[in-house]
Image (cartoon, rainbow, N blue to C red; front, side):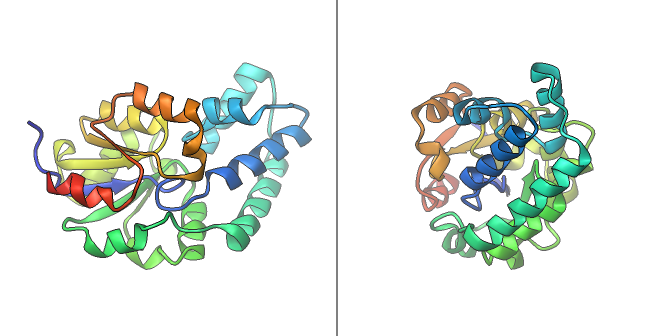
Length: 221
């Protein structure tokens, strides 16, 4: 039996905020402008949950597409504008954060600036200020365990004491590789896709749930 979780580590995109459809739309538009027609389904399958650095490597290695710094800066500007205009918190997350019986933090593949923009736009920033961990802080992004291990260490907990809430296959693989309990969250707009749900389930997280309020039940077990 695994220890009762003493720290909850949230992914950001697709867990705290319902951002994945917006982010994927802007990413695919950026890739198309650079000369590659990438289907949305393939974008979700190949790029979801990855850091921007890893996305650049995948695009160059698998498709021969180079996204230069100008393209990336333009993409960030469009994405942040879309977040400020459209982004919503995940349904029920604010109430859950108020009731969590243990400490929590966020560990995301996104850059620190994007995490802050997302959480400020949705009113969640006060819950996480000072408790934000980004893939830019480690050598290897998800699915390597480095980011979650860093979050656990800096928060003062052993990996086995942590419960990670993730929505992406890469993120679930990362948390499992770090020896942590994992709750696969399927409540985001993008998670309605059967292929996504199947891919998450195939990684065999310890829990699967659709409603954010169910996290409190998971912690109480």
